[in-house]
Amino acid sequence: MAENGTVVTEFILMGFQLRAELQVGLFLVFLLLYLITMGGNLGMIALIQSDPRFQTPMYFFLSHLSLLDICYSSVIVPQLLGTLDMDETVITYERCATQFFFFTLCASTECFLLAVMAYDRYVAVYNPLHYAAAMTPQTRLGLVAGAYAGGLLNSVVRTGCTFSISFCKSNRVDFFFCDLPPLLKLACSETQLREQVIYLLAFLVISSSSSVILVSYLFIVRAILKIRTGSGKAKTFSTCASHMTAVALFFGTLIFIYLKGNMGRSLGEDKIVSVFYTVVIPMLNPMIYSLRNKEVKDALKKALGRVRVSNQSET
Image 1 (cartoon, rainbow, N blue to C red):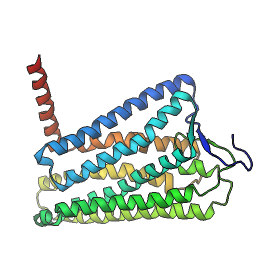
Image 2 (spheres, rainbow, N blue to C red):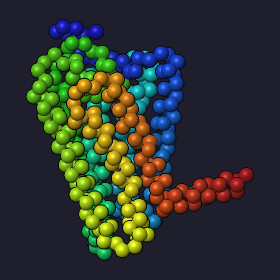
Image 3 (cartoon, rainbow, N blue to C red):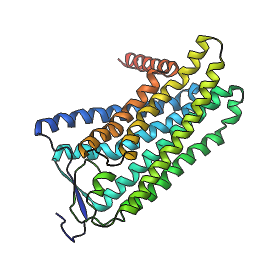
Image 4 (cartoon, helix red, strand yellow):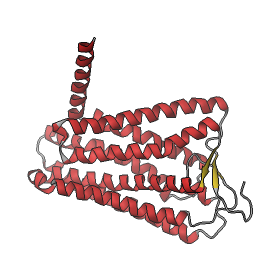
């Protein structure tokens, strides 16, 4: 183990540190959640790509959200399963930095993409006659590229700031993946300036994305209030309900864990919240968008029907 003055070349992820039987139970639960996440998001992408009804801007953005959730979950969950299977997992310094980079890239890009999806809903609801002209294929690609570029920039700066810190107090990370709060506890060099830059970036990403979402929904609510019939209002609102749910879940957990910093909160609480937004939310997103969307439910029923017919014909 690295002690005073010894430079860390590898980390030991300590995971949850629970009794053996509890670790086995959690391993099976998280493995099941991961398989559901992969199946749900891959299924959503396949459905969008195969059905002509889904060749619209909203579903184009949704397919990228599913792609991000697959990557997001795959960066973290295999490592999480490893810590549960072996109690402690050794991870090299380079691999830890790589995991941190891709985790930050996925999380930041998802923030920007959710903002893009809110803007898309604003254009569709507030100015439906000009929706097709406003959301051309080039515009969609530009908005998605901007989301990925913003996530990449934040990830490069955040990873550079974090891993330019000297770690020599210990190499035992009291967490199940390489995240910022537990890594900062191992620092033996001055971290105040770097922490300020990192948390400023987190604030800018979350505040800029949430501002776009908030303004978009203010205009959406204004448009809904102008609709005369109750059924028309309900139908218009339903097109935004899934996105609002996804935004509330994702941004709520990010604000809790990053913008609150370390004020009065233990790493045990951070682990619970981190499990929620790295394991649970990527699993829930395809369910949120399918269960609350009649078009997706109808397409799923037709796809399952075709599978049944195919199986019956083979037998």
